[in-house]
Length: 70
Image 1 (cartoon, helix red, strand yellow):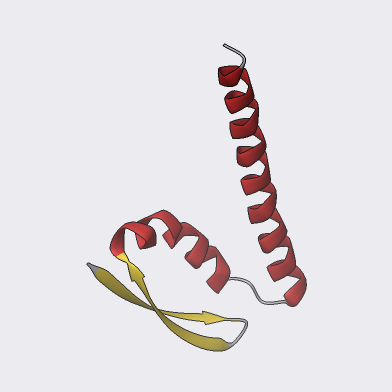
Image 2 (spheres, one colour):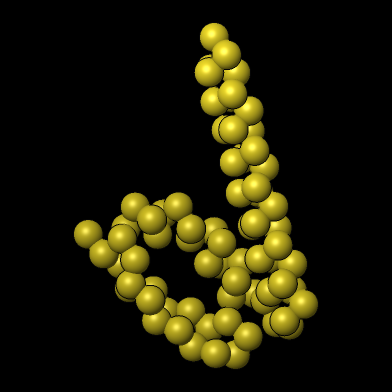
């Protein structure tokens, strides 16, 4: 099932349609995005998200490496 969401980010209105499961995954991030008022805040939000993904991918690579050595 799909869900349509209306957002206002930095004064710009957006309407997006997301799969409901994905919406549940990102709804906290979408709420945070609506509170961003300046490009600098948006940059930090983006970088923090990327840093989180980087750490997860790095950890997965380490686990795969350990599994390959077994």
